Length: 468
Image (cartoon, rainbow, N blue to C red; front, side, top):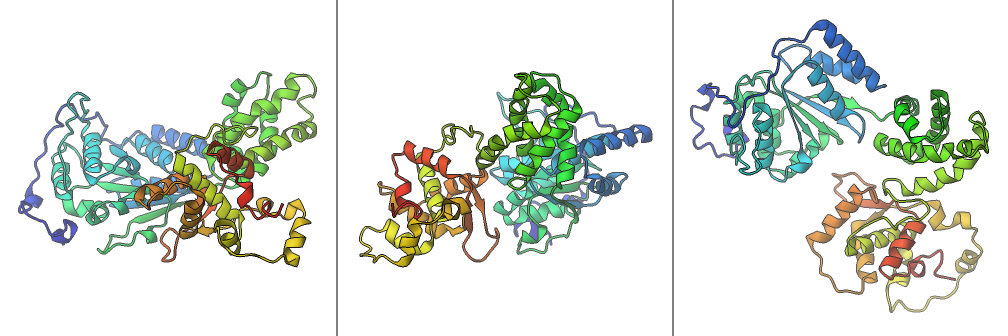
């Protein structure tokens, strides 16, 4: 079993499980954690404050509290939820309230397992890395080194290791995920591991038999819960407004803001950003004394066109009046985004006619004649994006790009970056055996601005306009 975890390399491992020595942290004193249970009254107040800060998460907080209220803690807990669902903040707040020593590591920052192991050891031991030297608590090149060094930390029993973006573990060595899930068995130390992820645990396909962790699900917030959470932002909204507003005025603003944006976005961070951004515009007629604060219907009519325009630039952090101007992308990423837009808003049956020079003559059909008279509401650019495969995206990219560029990993990395920027969205299962499918999230005005930056006529390659 040990050789399976360590990839068959157990050299120097003999006699490890009888090693029970403890040493103080090198280069600094260990953190002053109170190992005694927290005062019951203080703990109850902190839990109540945590529940008030995260409305709608009372069941999840109660479930986690049942796991970590008293030792022994579970060996591994897997927490799944979408972005901005409160996973990390609730786990950190709960462990802090219970005074449990823990290490919090974001796996996006860990480009190798060596970096991951050293960050965990530095936090659990309280070791502060000197920028001039850069020496960690201990160098760990392999999982075996990490397991051995973890046993050297003083009073490590009862500690918790929290790993954000746990799906990144699948990109590391095969034994890292299995090693963290079975960390208590390997070290003989009562250390718990909490994995935070956005994907289901069933997506962690692995050759080794993984220990099944306890699972906690953080579902998406409902509209009522989001309204309750955004109301907590009133002190910040009060500072943004040039007029004196009360909580009822802020609530009426959120009641017209949320139904518009909730259909396009469920991300709490993005919704909070957009609500703060447009609150001053909502208050402007009251500031100009054109309307009263009680004229909710008139204020809604003023702000509705601004809301509708802003939904098309979600996640872009650009102005809805000049979309695309503040969007800085690499040269080839701009062409990839243009190709994605063309793939989303053109039928695959028209690709040969649009993107090949010698496609042959095409006779006019009744469909072409009716297309000229097609109402604007039925245009492809008005209906919405359709899914496309990666092969089709790259084929269009190479056909519209004048430079001859070979296929390489940099193009795939730029596609992944566009997905992370929410400019593209994944329309297929991440672990699907078929090709991945994507959708383009930017609107026509944004893609036109980006096309002008590279001198590309995007209207020429859209079926809605190519017949004109």
